[in-house]
Image 1 (cartoon, rainbow, N blue to C red):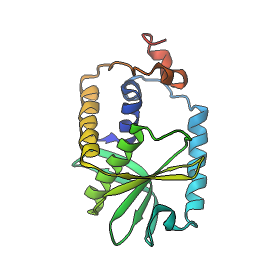
Image 2: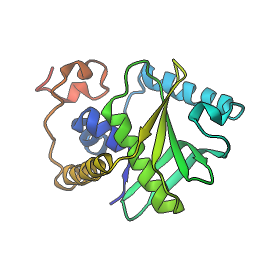
Image 3: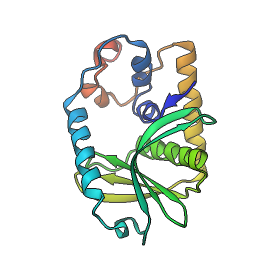
Length: 190
């Protein structure tokens, strides 16, 4: 069973989002942050085509935007925002619409993309980048063995949720529930 890379990000935000995405048969409302993020991603994709790779600490390379990846061995599929290919290897880049510090969910999502690039394209990935759109800040993320293990563990945990169709516990950080599109389905946290 292939899962989406976005499920990994959502799982670390709140595992119930993954459950509801697959098992709550309702139209998911598009929130303002979701709309705004989609527009920002498109604008950045256009602007990034003209910018220098030195912002990423790279001298040269080829950029590919919106790279669809389907990694059967990992059981993952997704669309990477940007892939920079150089002679030294490949560098996945994820665009994020946030001013806040990087959360672990973004690092695990980036790690999943790095492992998918390795499987699908046969290129080595030692690091990736997270580009925070509002601040134009680029953060290098080393793709460590610890990040890889935790990402693989999360894939297994997501598959368990999906296989047993059992709602997992909510996130302990209840502030996340305020803007969640599924909050009305979590009666135990309202």
